[in-house]
Amino acid sequence: MSFMDEYRQKLRTPEEAVKVIKSGDWVDYDFGHAHPVVLDKALAARKDELRDIKVRGCLALRPLEIVNVDPKREVFTYSSWHFSGYERKLHDQGLCNYIPMIFRNKPLFYRKSLEVDVAMISVTPMDQHGYFNFSLTNTASKAITEKAKIVIVEVNEKLPRALGGQEESIHISEVDYIVEGDNPDLPVLPPPEPTEIDKKIASLIVEEIEDGSTIQLGIGGMPNTVGTLIAESDLKDLGCQTEMLVDAYLAMYKAGKLTNKRKNIDKGKGTWSFCVGSKELYEWVDNNPGLAAYPVNYTNNPWVMAQNDKMITINNCVEVDLFGQASSESSGTRHISGTGGQLDFLTGGYMSNGGKSFICFSSTYTDKKTGEVKSRVVPTLPSGEIVTDPRTQAHYLVTEWGKADLAGRSTWERVERIINIAHPDFREDLIKAAEKMNIWRQTNKIL
Image 1 (cartoon, rainbow, N blue to C red):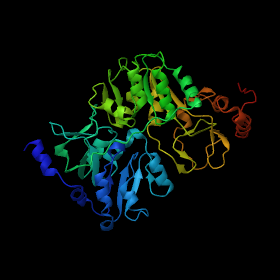
Image 2 (cartoon, rainbow, N blue to C red):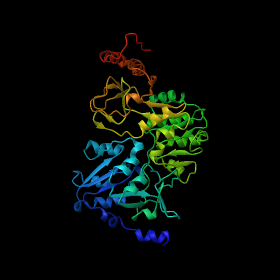
Image 3 (cartoon, helix red, strand yellow):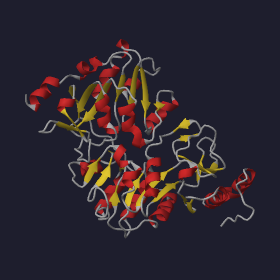
């Protein structure tokens, strides 16, 4: 049987395909651009026939029909590995739960611990060799489909083909059913306009980067600003090893900065796991032999990334306390995003020969409810707030007021350095709090 004969044999309408889902099933939508569209609608249409359907997804870039049709969660329970802005709003309404993880462990969670009855994943059209490509998402797609009892792929002709790496494709022999989708345009996520504070923090980080460094940029405006500033700098022969491929890497490439020539592993290739950004970024990914898509148990493995000399990792946080604990995923008990790969890269960057790991944040923020300006440096993290980076893994913290290297420092040393980069308006109160917690030396000086 030819691949096209097998394709025709497995082809179904969305309505036919979702009939395999039965009450009590675990259904997986995978991640970001891999979320199915027509299959999601077809499953939602079965609401009155089913009960207790648990759906896992991650970084949803479009509204989910299973949520729209079931606002009381009577049938569908949706959970996410990492919140997009849309999923954060769902969580605030009680319509989405978070799945805690360290990102590099996600494929292992599926292979070792999780049940998947049906996987429904958007893919590229099949190639002449019988392979569907996972495109802009390769975080744990192979692990999900390996564990699933039934695999349904939804073809979207607008998805680019991402070269690997490893585990970037699935063969038709591993697929149970094929659905041809509506080929919707891909959601884009343009980088936010940088603030003056973003630019100041970015400049402090860029001065720490050397020629030949390998760069990881996390999610958010500030890391993207760093990448943009790198593109405008005199730096050269930089490399890419990241979980998230963003437009800043394209800017570095177009400026001749991103060559990957001096990487110790994957030399000549930018390694990444998922991609969200502009249409031009997606076009850059398409069949590009200079890029290699890997699952997160490779891109986010500290021992892998640390093989690259001068590994530089740059991520955001929400708040930091005087012990050096950083929260990057919640505000109190309100969940915002997720752990993602921040701890992975924080660890691997420091392990690298000549490497550095930066957690950056503006020193203050304005409370949307009260209009009050508040410090992002706090004595202790609020009750219920999630610690993303433990104090034992704290390295460089950066605000617009400077850099604080906390690696190996005692509590009195780090509290002094942290207060030095807090906003001046809040430093005296922070000193008083440090005194009450017995982590302030009388000889400490604030610069």
